[in-house]
Image 1: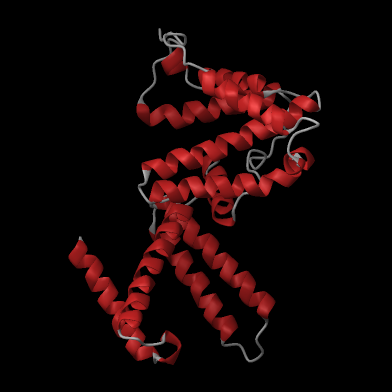
Image 2 (image 1 turned 60 degrees about the vertical axis):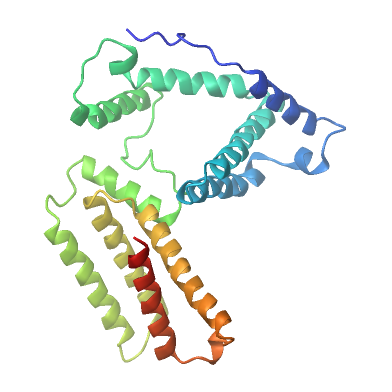
Length: 273
């Protein structure tokens, strides 16, 4: 069986970070850090998580290292606040996740044998047992944080429904649903009297259907849209660069000329590949 203590990391820098955080929150520490609460920090935590994702997407290992440090600092910050409130500390946070990961990987830390295809089912079964032990509610959505970014929330909700059989078994009806939702958007846009609320609702339904399509294709919708945004940005930077080279203003150009440069940007991408 795997020995958890086969190698002990040097915690010198982690202890240093914990001491820095404690100093920042001390009476003679930093005024900004001292006034922060868990609630006030959440937006920074979300931003740091996205900055980690951006650094990974840029394939810049040094940027990833820096951003992971920023994200770690957020965890240390929350832990220090909780410690001051007599709730928990960083040690108990680390202990809890160690216990959870050990418990949820009996095929690694125990004697359980499981095929790779059954790993997710095992994981969910262990999670369900954990919830029952703490008296959690019975809704399948209890494990879905409502504050997730919209694409992540949609994908999590759909995944939970799929686990209890409320899902299509083939991709064809999923694609049909996407087309249906787009048709409904078009119908609302072309209605005699435009209702912005109904258009918003139909666009939301279409986005939800697209997330479902992504899920059925084993694609993370958030990652796919992020990559599409980066690709669009790179192509438009190509257009900006060409306009600068030709001493032209984009706002003075017609759409046809811009579209031609857009096609040039796409061609340049293919040549680079």
